[in-house]
Image 1 (cartoon, rainbow, N blue to C red):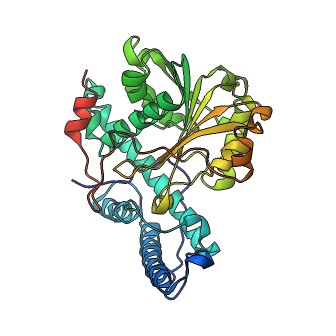
Image 2: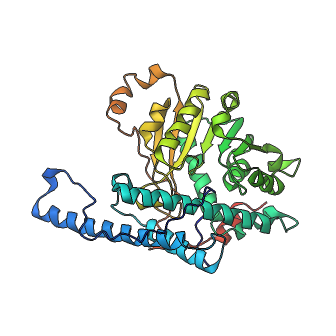
Image 3: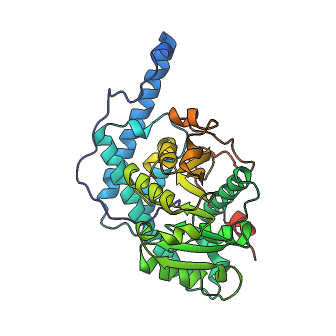
Length: 371
């Protein structure tokens, strides 16, 4: 089985620049008091590890950019499998401290991944639509079990940090043609909630509606699809108890911060925000969200969780509050220092990934969502 990278659609960004060499470049800066001879040795080892990783990823980015098409194919699958395998294991790399050139490479790579995911989603949405009962065949998607686990993680974090959470209305921003997350949440974790799924692409919404919203009863009756830019939503956002923000809504930090600020300006006090982010080398696949940007957007950050298993995305849970609460005695000092209020321990279901492996778990996924 092939492992295929699955990311939200965006503009195809192409570059013909050869992959740069990073030999001898230092990427990590450690505090002076750590720089004993032994720590210098460890720092050099880490620098070499980071340099080798960046050089490998730059080479993969260059190869992916040269592909004639990002539609699913053996070569596309191979390159993205190599990329995911390189990025998922724990790494000392801090992508926020890359040089400007490497940062441009990373942003270009995320856009390439996004475009490839769009084509992959469309391909599998059309495939599933050929079945009489598409929902019985969702596990054909290679990363379906990852979305089962990611949605369960998000729900468990919400339940842990927002006690008694029982939303009536939920919005998912950036749902795409295969809104697995909304479906899993609606079917198994939030059975009384109605889901409004928003995406910029009308064709994506048509595919999603055909697969998930066709029925007039059950889960389908609680899932609606809207073609809109989140920047154009205002009063609508005030109707939701929980808003989920997909990883690739806002491709760079500035865009993501603007989206979060817009949500903060229109969501009601007490509503919850769930933001997908990334950590470590996984930041080459997805944008990294700074919790401080969430706080500046008008939210209290309740939890930040970085999975170590097959779930690639980090999850941040926050709550909309008034400005006075943000500067109160309980949270003011921590926020003033830019500290993360809480880093969640791993949830009970998280499993440790075997080296470099990203295997689909059809049996698990089928068991999780059997009807």
